[in-house]
Amino acid sequence: MDTTRRLVEFVGNHWSLALAFVGLAILLIHAELRRQLDGIQHLGPHAATQAMNTEGTVVLDVREDSEYKQGHIPNALHIPLGQLGKRLPELDKYRDRPLIAYCRTGNRSGSAARLLHKQGFATVHNLAGGIVAWQNANLPVTKK
Image (cartoon, rainbow, N blue to C red; front, side, top):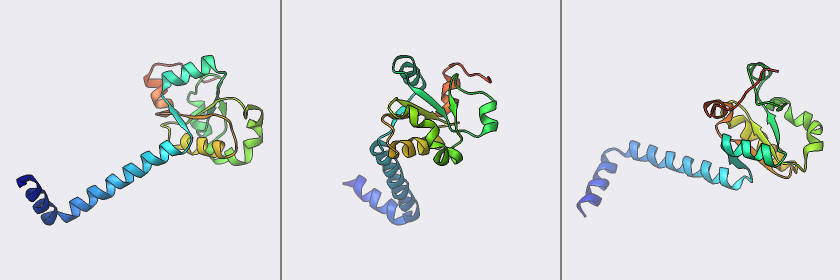
């Protein structure tokens, strides 16, 4: 009971810290629940490579042109996130194939993956950690 009393005393003395902690915990729980319920599977670089090699997965780079030119996953299609909505017809022929979207760190591609999923693409994945994780795993990139 001494621990409970000390916790209550701490919260009473440092209510702003306790409130910040509770707020951050709620935000983290919300983000994790959203991630799990959005219908998007987040694949690490090695799982993505396996999917690319065995499932005929299409890879979509949603970074800006300048980022793409600095290096991208071989054979990746390139449609910047800001243009994805109006360029969706270009992806129609891949609608029934698994698709992995990626960007620099996985945030923009998460948005792209959710959009594609909502538009009826069968299986959409997000490359967790983006091209940064891909490069950290020593997987190939190309500038072609």
